[in-house]
Length: 228
Image 1: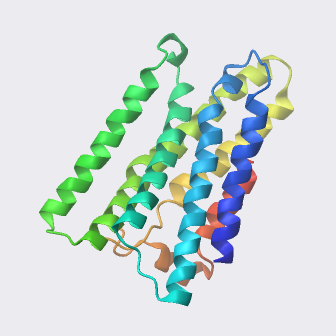
Image 2: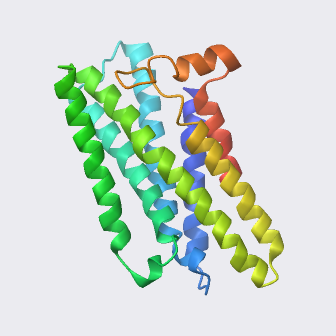
């Protein structure tokens, strides 16, 4: 519960800091693309706090998450990763010449996620708890990992603008933020809950806890603080 509290707080703080900075007038393309990153921090923080309350209720009240609660949790998780993808796609080469195209691209990825969830439910004749777990894992594999990699790539590319204007110290900060995004997304989202989806049956959060002695959520929290 404590880990999830600070996990959510780290991402909420990320959203708040980025939102305050994105309101400043700037000629940098990077600054104009920050709003989805701020919304990612807020929505992902809400997801982690909601999961924290679920864990607390399970342990103290013998609560079992129902369809409404799990659907809300999954939708907030999905929305946060889609916002992260929008941030990364907005900073791709030529994105400013095609305004609004990132929404279409991200919507197609969301559609692919929904198709994959439906296929898993049909292929395995899965129960609702199995479907929710698979949907969670597919969102992390198919949206969070690409979104984090895109965000890291975008930050590395934006370093050139800062270096060209004699602001190399900020370019170095972007590099460290890119590394933190890679740790959060590519490594942190590889260890997920156990589900029907390969390879989550073996490479999952329980395995990470056994090997390193800390929950994977703590690593994601540290990554969020580093990005902030």
